[in-house]
Length: 358
Image 1 (cartoon, rainbow, N blue to C red):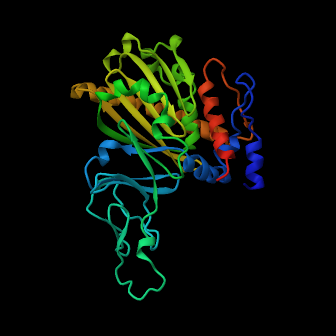
Image 2 (tube, helix red, strand yellow):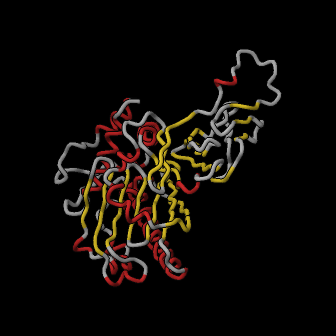
Image 3 (cartoon, rainbow, N blue to C red):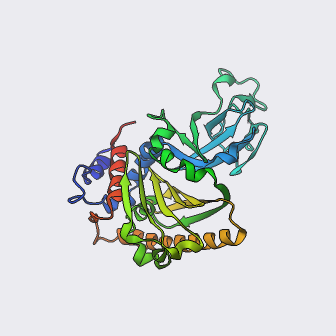
């Protein structure tokens, strides 16, 4: 690591108890060395959710996504196997597939027409006769680890240290029954003018901002019984919903976070996921996928309207925080011991990942 990056990492102490802890420094939300290190270490060594299992169920079906600057492709082969590759042609680095999802019998780069089969093997190299010391079998697509759990597909760019299901623990055992009856209905996409970590911080503040930022949500949630638990790579905030939430939400709300950038919001018969993708030090993309049981169209419409309103409120406060982080008046903040243990948990995981060597 560079001396500059070492100096930045030394400014945060992840060993302090929550009562004495400070947040990561504001510099971490802007610095290009931090962003580059996050790409290599945080997003390069973790299981990252990239899509839904239903997108790649059929043979020949595929999905693509750019994660922290890495173009990725997941495809179901003719043999029924699921594989993931860098979505980068071995000839001139153009993308192989340009659509977010679809079906294909082969993978063909539109730049120079190089063609790969669904196992990633290079099959076609137009007008490449006479090239010396070139072995087609050594120029297939670069493969990465891929796994599914429940409705989710994830990739790991480096050798995973544990299975995807183990990485999620204890989310699978505590949510499988609730997710089983849900089906994907709609996707919504938002671009925010803030660092991806600002969005995660906001999500993980233990409901601290609900009463002030989300007055409508505050009426639905019994804030006095809101609780947070942290685990190895995940955390969950939960609390019972009041009768005021019965129109669109009921039961017990569960807000699961999976390091570094995935969230699952679960209620009775309703769920949505948030996938937070960095677009640079001060911009991010948030993809929402919505799942429902067999509710009617009005219920779904009302539920989506509530979710959209909450997201606009979160986007507004996150962008305000990003501007404030750039002020010379601010460097670090403190954590609410009662509410923000999941936020400190995130910062500690982040610091640990950034400190690891490749």
